[in-house]
Length: 398
Image 1 (cartoon, rainbow, N blue to C red):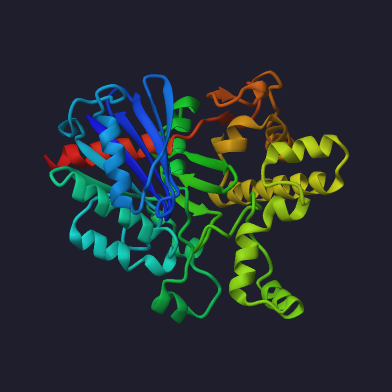
Image 2 (image 1 turned 180 degrees about the vertical axis):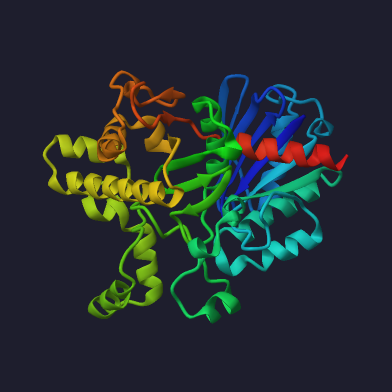
């Protein structure tokens, strides 16, 4: 079954055409600068094509993508009839969605009711749905939510210590993100570690520029580091993660800036970028540290210390752990960051396999065989996860 996976942003549209049975990607790409001058990057048949073209709105962008997929020279299918379903990444489903759903008008209304929780992402996601529906009216469309996997968290994990009316009136609570990745990686980790997914305790560390950790018990998320928004939790590339809330008013008064301006600073100018003054890329920080840059060294220390703290907290929340996974950008590729994490959790009886740590982007047991807890590198694949969930839902509806 050919599934078109679409991830639509406010001015971009990423796509992959995946065979759900073979898991092969036949074409992929990205439409950038939608609403401006426009650029399409398209990969197929082992080649990469870049085209500068007007993309005034998302509907035009998706039409251009579909034209490329059926193009006589560069295409990978003969007609659009060979696309059996479309899977859409949705950032925020609030409390309304605890699993993926086939998109109807009622579903779109429910997603729109969560727009306050993700004002930059949800409206853009819906634009992608509308554009695809118009271009492919006879095809089923499925919404796969970043937040859905974490809807199994108990109240003690998702409620904040705030007056309860803010939760009741505005939905202020922990939702968590990267759910598609945490679900995909945890299932694969159970297979690799020889665990029964529905009778296991796992910790998944999604360590990219955006980063989060989740505690997964018996196949269900019981806690996760991101909160009502993706700003809470770990120190990230440009996001602060956990801070004392009183800092916001303090800096606003000292710098004479608005709360909105401060929120932008917390999201885009903080994290390891703000700490180091060097970069939001962990690889650049490692290089700078090697050159003697103390700020870069401190940024890496703060980054890893926060990760280690969350792993320790989730070890206690789970009542032990059967396996740990490192995934996403740094988790899959950065040996220096991985080494620091492994050293930080050595109290769990974990030792690093130095040879395995040279690996980039491949599944491998990172811990030694005599470690008390196995730690695996498990590459994430959110697009494949969206493809699989879409295919399963569509099959079940037939």
